[in-house]
Image (cartoon, rainbow, N blue to C red; front, side, top):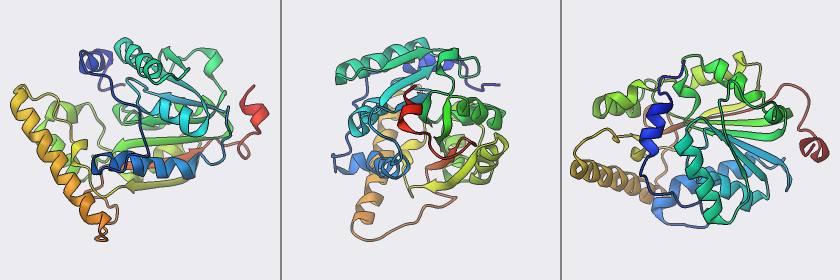
Length: 274
């Protein structure tokens, strides 16, 4: 069961300005999270070659698809069941001058031509909305070629300060999530039959991951957003000056799992492009 539902996402994306494509060369404090994810993808997508296929599932308004195309020369596609989200994802690609395919559909009942075709599948904040997390991972794994890589990113809401603040500040948003911890995300990958490479807390801080979109008072919502951003930037400023804080269960904003489909090593480029 999907705790959020299509109507939730359509209403969330409606009338929102389009995001700018991810730029890993932007070294400003406000771009810290994206730069750190770039460093992660540099490692985990090293086995892919230009022209290989990547699919983002839950691609609504994706700022990442242009990045994957530009940075690695990948043939990018996205899948989402939100009409509004798909339209905006197409617009982001078009504005970036990137060709790609955005498919409106359900990951549990996808078009047959998507199955077993991708060297990499990524999702950002997707699987934690489904009550059966292993089934969600199994659905994602069906898109991979043998040995393809699956990268799953979720907010760290299980037994964490992030989860506590989300539940306190905006309970409706909290309730559309399954509050998973690292052990649960790890087990979901294994239960889906995937070969888990890593599952870890990611980054030490990003208070902006706490979603307060349901606050009705726009002025207070903007004030709170500035406080969230300011606190995060202050911590990143300290980290840049050598005061390091390791990722941890309590304050890390994300959990990232990297796994591979169960048969063999990463397929050859010819097989990935079939």
